[in-house]
Length: 466
Image (cartoon, rainbow, N blue to C red):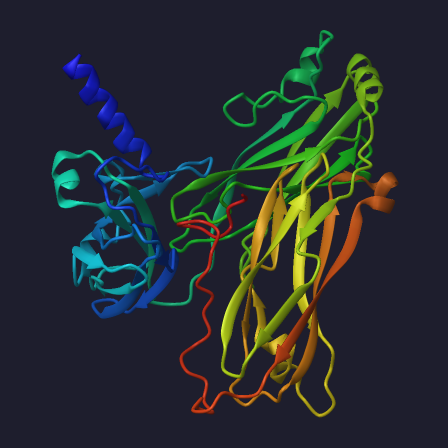
């Protein structure tokens, strides 16, 4: 029984890596870490410095001081976007040996913050991108020694770029699978129609949709955030459809691979087809990669697909909030989130940009368009997937008190056939009203510090789909 109890305790500790768990006798507290992801640039053989802020977020009557432990750890990302931390995941591009912290243990009073400072020392031979994570553990000294009663652990990703020259992203498409629909009363699908079915490990079993799975490998020395799409062609090479590709984590680190998936619910007639997969690196100088795959639809499958297709008449996107209202004083900086949800049965590509009313005699960069930035302007969503977009607003100290208006324009295109493209593209707008009040006494007429979005959706990569 004692052995079984120890085993259960170890399992609880492993689970606490992600979720908040309270145990009797532990301090009731919360921990906020910012930023959850940051890039540090350093020259070969040189040093660079960065900071991570840790806050005791709880202020309740039962809240006490919180002890935080900081460790630099390795992590890796699987082809499906899952993160794994620990010594067993050490790799050739680890930045762990380069990072030193000014403290490995500190105490934060309720409502207070601690600025953890860190130094990166890059070897003279380093070249390209390297990475590590700072793991913050909330608990008490006794729990740390016994490996039990850990309350919370969270990680801040640190990506180090040792720039020796200008880099061009390099990638290769290593695999493409076409997965055909399956239904409850499945017919015998001829071998030529089934030969491109994706494995359960890649995309799972398809139900009434065409699914494309494509694997992309980063062959270069720097991280990349590619955009993927698929064009569908009939037997006579006539393009008949478009399918965006999404990934659970779009950023691909050097040497890593990532699976991207596209889904189209509209049925196809019997015949021969091909898909052409496109990937661009997401940068100005990156090269586009393509790969073609052929497949066929049998008469039996085409009839069953058409019979089971019920249409996709639901709205494409759901936005929350419908309007953003902010009241800020000159010199203020704030962030707000916009939730974008895909309500359709197919994948959707989304492009966002900020527009503003042109003020007479005021350049665009001095108006609300220049004050407002989005943490991501282009991404794809899985069916029923969603994503939080961070909208950061910084008011210049010399802004005149008045109401300023801007708009976040969202253009979305879902997968579908060209002949049915009437409802495949929608353009939505979120009004943004910024009420600027009078400048507070003592506020300097200078912009302090640089512009940086601190809030992200994921501990390591802000491109993750929620």
